[in-house]
Each structure stands twice: as structure tokens, then as C-alpha cells.
Amino acid sequence: MGQTIADKIFASHVVDRPAEGVFVLRLDAVFCHEITTPPAIVDLEARGKDRVFAPDRIKAVIDHVTPAKDSKTATQGKILRDWARRHGIKDFFDIGRNGVCHALFPEQGFVRPGYTIIMGDSHTCTHGAFGAFAAGVGTTDLEVGILKGVCAFRRPRTIRIEITGSLPAGVFAKDVILSVIGRIGVNGATDRVIEFGGPVVEAMGMEERMTLCNMAVEAGATSGICAPDMTTVKFLWPFISQQYGSPQEALEDYLRFAPDPDADYEQVIEHDVSNLSPQATYGYKPDQVKPVSELAGTPIDQVYLGSCTNGRLEDLQVAAGILAGKQIAPSVRMIVSPATPQIYAQALEQGLIATFIQAGACVTNPTCGACLGMSNGVLAEGEVCAATTNRNFNGRMGKGGMIHLVSPATAAASALAGHLANSELYQEGK
Amino acid sequence: MKTFGGNILFLDRSDINTDEIIPAKYLTEISRQALKPYLLEDLKLEGFDPASDLAGKQVIVTRDNFGCGSSREHAPWALEVNGINLVIASGFARIFRQNMFNCGMLAVELAPEQIEAIFSKFSPGPARAEADPRTGQLVISGNGKSLEFSFRLGEFDLALVQAGGWVEYADSRY
Ligand code: SF4
Image (cartoon, rainbow over all chains, first blue to last red; front, top):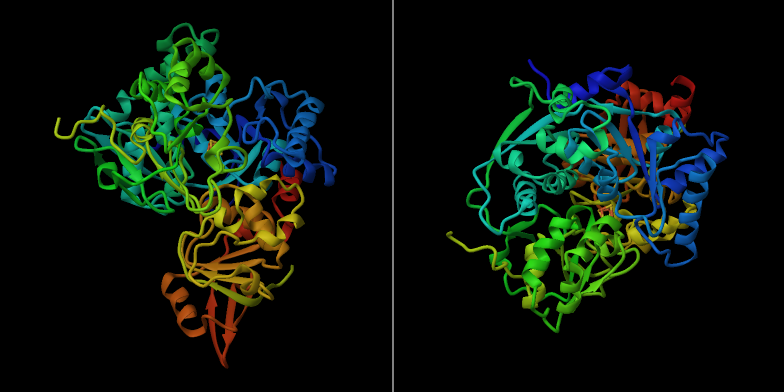
């Protein structure tokens, strides 16, 4: 039987098999942020092992709480900053140059097809959009990654999700992934890799593929992966043009990591999106998903546009297109966090920021912000937020708050309406 | 090797996530001990009160997909500083399970019917569990009754528990 993308990446990176079914992989990159890395640094110091395996393969950012909100978060930032300096980690992104890790690192060209990547962050699966095996890990795995450049995994079986049909107008990658999670459940891909493929994925740009892979972990998956293709190469070309003679040559090289036609999938799920409508979550689990139309009218207090799921330029463009020349409902407060400084700058240039401000939204610096209720945008008890983020867990955006996960289009339309609403971009039956 | 066991806290729900185990707002703490008062603060479970229900418990018995969500190792740490080093469930989220073993804690997976049997015989307690990772033997007792189960740890999981965690294991080998 042929191999899946993950099988191929495993085969090309295995350095040890300490037990049946366990693979110790060589890592191409270790990503770090200021919440989960400081405990790893402090522990390595305590063990007398304050070393890094390769400073140029470690990338670090302060993104979750920035600017620091109090002495504790200032200390977290300081531990990461001092460590990066001490070890000559050049790709360290501090305030002014920092952005949400899973948007920033791909934008910097740090992710390549066939890479193995870990980070102390569950949404590391985002980087699978480039044909990489990228997995979230805990602090101890991160420590070993930093120290030795390796990580142990059980061989993950692959579930192939073939996304077929064609996306109706006003329906986006976010709606697709919400519908997939609603279908397979929060435990549907635990210990599995989800390989996303099919005509709808092939037609998607890299930003949409990242949205798709970002939420793979919400179905329990170790990583979401899309096969590398010309879209991947074009995105990466500014970073790889020295390495390859032509985009074609790069593609041929990357196709080493394409799945075999007879790949050994545990399961193949066909997911037709031709009749898909905008989707939203309604409970405290990401698989509690319904069409927005069935939830229309649900009052909201806050709208959050941002995060590693949907804080990229296209997301801001879609939302600004809906908000242009209009005012958000007086009962709603809207917060926009462009995911990186580059996205922020482009949004400024394109007039999107002006649109948000004129509509009555607050625009923050690039940060995780309201997504995990650690710094700004925290909800009060009983408040409701329509958010373009990826997790609606109880208490995530503030104790007693409720989050409806939606696309940027639904978020913008709901901000105007003052309650959950389909955007005008979506017209049923068309 | 240390022993794993003690009084059981029954959490009769699937998909208990890491934000419920330790809310994100406490991730600003660098010391593990500082997490202690906040364990399961946001758990959505009818009648559950962390202040009274956690006292004197060393073991959690729960349903499926325990620890789903974030990668935060703060979740097993928050258990550990509260004296809990054994969780028995019908399934765990991948990162959480790995974090448990990486910290030298024990995650025991049983079939859903076996978990059901434990709940129906012993919940809400008082009941005790004792697990031996070497022999793979688990005994649940309470109310004058007892049940015995066997579980299997992977060779690698056992090696990690024996080596005292993944950092020492990896640094000496790779
Ligand atoms: S935006 Fe939210 S989900 Fe993404 S990395 Fe930040 S906190 Fe995590």
C-alpha cells in the first residue's frame, strides 16, 4: 500500500524507534511563544541543560499578551527575550514586529513542505497547510525539542477528508471546517492526521488552507495536512527562489511529499460542500455546529475578528467589504486584531482599517487578544461574542461568557445586525 | 517507581477540556504551585464544586477524550500540585496523554464498558483506586466491593515513567 503525506514525512525524519509504533523524529523547526516556552526554559535551567539544538531552527514570538498587561506577563516576555538573546536566536519577534505565531511564521517563510515542526501550542497544526507535519506539544516535549531537535510520536493513522462540490458564494473555509468538525466530532480524529484534499482544497489559497488546518485539532487531530502544489510554491517563492531554478523545479521537489494514489488511509470521508451554508457553533464544544440561519437573531454583545484562524488579510478584506459605509449596531462592540504587522500595514494601505474605524470598530495591535481571554476583549458573565476564532470552550473569553465561532463574513454581518446573521454575500438557493 | 492511587474523584462527562482543567487566565503563572487553587475552576458539570469535591482526592475517573483542547502542560501540572497523579478514562486527547507520561504521571485507558462499570458500582464514592504500571493491574474498591482490571502501557510510556520523564531519557540518548 502507498503512503500518506504524514507517512512520507515520518519515513524521511525518523532517527529512532524506541518501541513498537513509536517514532522519534528529527525536527526542522521548533516554534516558541511566551506562554508555554518560559516554563520549559526555567526547567532546562534548573536541570543544568540551558542549551538549544540549533539557534537558526528555533523561532520565537511574544504574541499572546502583548503589550504586557501586568508584571507576570512582563516576566514571561522577559524570560523568552533574554533566552533568545543568550542563545543567538535571530528569529525572535518582539513588540512592534510581533504577530500571532501561526500567521507570522508562515508569512516569514519558516514553513516548507515536508517539514517537521513542533510548538507548545495546539494550533500548530495550522502549518500543515504547507504539506508539513506540524503538531502541538506540551512543555516537556517542547523542552526536548529545544534541547535535542527531536520529538517522539506514535505513528498517526491518516483520515483523508475529500472536500468536493463547489463552495457557494458567501461560504468560506471557516464554514467548511466547522461543518467537518460538526460531522466527525471533537474526538473524531484523536491521534490521527487529517489530510484535506479534493477539488475545493485544490482551489483554495494558502490563507484558506491555513484556516482549514488550524481547526484540525478541534476534532482531536495531531495535524491537518494539505498536499503541496503550485499554490504552495507560489506563496513560498520569495523565500525559495535562491534554492530552486524555477517554481516547477521546486514543485517537483515538494511532490516527494504528495500522497500516493493508493495511500493507506484509515478512512476516507467525502464531504460535499455544494449546499453548505454559513455555519456557527452554539455550545461550548466546537462540534456543536448549526447553520447561521437557524441561530439568526441570537443577541450578541461583542464581535471579535482576528486570531490564527481568521485574522489574515483576506479575512479583513471580506469583513471590511461587508462593513464598508455602514455602522455596527449600537448594542455591539467590535474588536479587530490584524494577525501580523504586515497584515496590519496592508490593511492600512488598502483602507480596511479606516473602514473598520468608520464602522465603529476598535482595532488593536497584532496579538491573540480576545481569543483566549488573557489580555483584552474579555467578556463579562453572561455576555455573548461572535468570534472568528477556533475555540468556544466554557470560560475561554472570560468566565461565564459564550462564544459563537463564525467566519469573518458572518462576524461582520452580525456586527451590523446586533445579532447572529448571514452576510449579504450569501444568498440561499443561488 | 512511585505508586499511583488514592481516593477517586468521579467526573461523569466526556470531552472535559484543558480550559476547564485550568483556565487560560492562570497561564501567566511561572510556578506550578501557583496553579493549585484553580484546578477545574471552570468545569461544567452539574453539582460539581471544586472547593469541596477535590479535597483529599488523588485519582480522577472520567469518560472519553479527557484533556482535549490546548497543549498546555499546566493541565497535568495543576492535577499534580493537587496530589492527583492518576487519571482513568475511556480515552485521552493526544497531547494531554503525552504530557501526563512526560511528567511521570499515569494515564490509564479502559474500555467504555469498564468505565461504565466503575461509575455504576462506585460513583459518587467514597472509593479508591490503586494502579501498578509494571504489572498493569488496577484495583478499584469501595463500599465493601472491589473490581480488578488490567491495562497495558506502551513499552515507551513505561520507559518514560521509569526514566523519570522524557527530558532525561532524550538527553542521554539523542
Ligand atoms: S490566536 Fe488564539 S488559538 Fe491562535 S495561537 Fe493565539 S490564543 Fe491560540
